[in-house]
Image 1: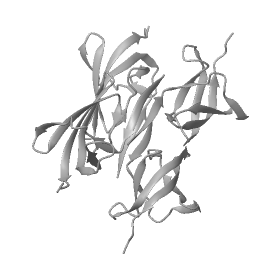
Image 2: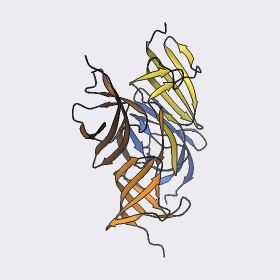
Image 3: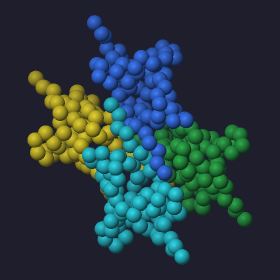
Image 4: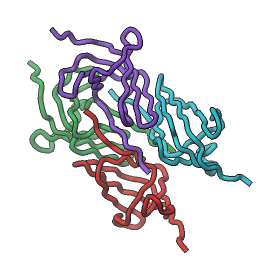
Length: 80
Length: 80
Length: 80
Length: 80
């Protein structure tokens, strides 16, 4: 009688994010993942990589053991 | 740097649920509310009322400090 | 960068609860499990069994991938 | 029938942390706050201040609408 989920502190994209418009991206993940909304979160390409920017989650959807997270990139670190 | 939310153990409808089709209903609530998905939850009209049935949450959406929960009524208690 | 946990809607004891005093019991579980505090939860001996009573969680501790939950039994169903 | 809580992404001490031993500190907060365990979290003195270091939460306790979090400081930023 429990629901497994994972509380996230970082958005790890693995390059699978899709741009919706402007700085808004959508990312789909397996399982139920809780990304806190409306607060700044680091964005990384992989768990080990440096932060590529900071985003704010604007929408979170859970269905069929999948998570869809919509986030707005609010700052982007340069990678020169 | 925190996200307020409320973990729910019962679906309290206050009569605001809308039937989508068959036994599937949608309910909108203020704030971020976590209704565990894929497990049976009691449905009540008010916090104090008796359970009117049992439902399973199939979809949960959070956006703009609002929650949209889609649930399937799996059993209905008679109210004679 | 995530923490796996499981949101619980029922206290399943598997007979491993230990009485602390009066109606207060302690139960240890593997993993991080979130039992909502200060609200009534059903108590069952197994996932499939009937509810044996209703309890309110008074304390929750997470450490070393284990959960310790302290709950007060507030009503007990007879089992004739 | 819900439990209000707040998901945290940063440890904000407001200077109220108490050293237990070595790099281990305890912090008490009002309300139920979920600090993800076993993953690195930024530590700040105030919400607005710069990160003072990185910590890993080792223990989380919830009781009487209060949270006690035990964390290990794993790196400390210099503040010259």
